[in-house]
Image 1 (cartoon, rainbow, N blue to C red):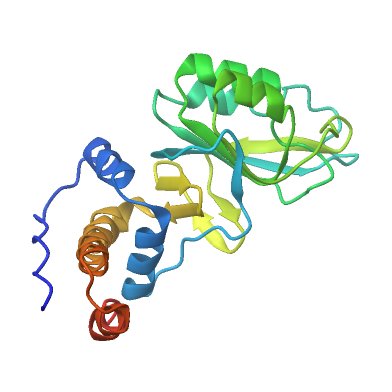
Image 2 (image 1 turned 30 degrees about the vertical axis):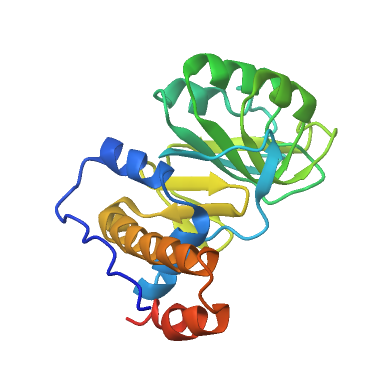
Length: 232
């Protein structure tokens, strides 16, 4: 039995708040497939949910950390505080860090971000005070957990400026989706296109799953549909 055609996606939606709500109905796997289909990058490899397991989506607020040295050692502003103050409810803080021997995020920051209405934080590096984040039910995605402090090791260089998460260029106001499979970063200028493609892919996969659950042969279902979904 051939699969039904998934519903067409209405074009022309540009409001970022609506796009965030559409993202929350997807998962990072569908978004990753959409990025592949469009020839784009955006999957932040190695970053996984640390506390607690959750799905978050929102507009990006950026923060960049660098190693402490003689030139920046006089920095007194605690890392993360400016990003939290710059965030609006529902935003997601994304941190360029890269180190796993010093935390770029901790418990007091989680409490402050939770109070501000921040949806979560994504750390390209290590975070700490994970138990506190879990108690607060504040989502933290990171490459590792560590008890080691940032004091004397790293300082904040900037916030709300472009950052690199791995090899992905991320700007303030871009969109991000994070769930149990990982983290997908989407340039604001391509968000409507990526989300629309992901919605089509998710709808087709849902139909395939229905076909398998009703007893269709999985070899036939996967063979006739799966390999063609990402054709450009």
